[in-house]
Length: 104
Image (cartoon, rainbow, N blue to C red; front, top):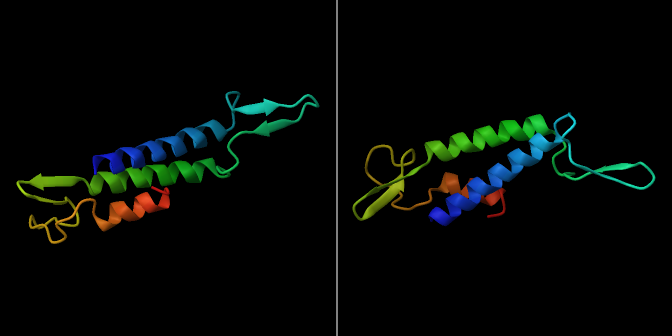
């Protein structure tokens, strides 16, 4: 399931890059049309500050729900915090829900 985590991290990173690109400043990506109109490239990132806050929150969630592996048993460091894998599954439901939000 490391592939899932890597894809999720890549999606979060992509959101961060898109939000940073939409922040006011000279490096904002756009297309200059012949008539002088500028078309901005990231229409889905309408609120970059909010997107950056969500990116930070999603990274915290991933950090809190890291996989632990003890012999034949795997689990989530948060969901199975008692040291006994109650779900005995990885990824945990929290990570799966986060991945679903990114279409993964």
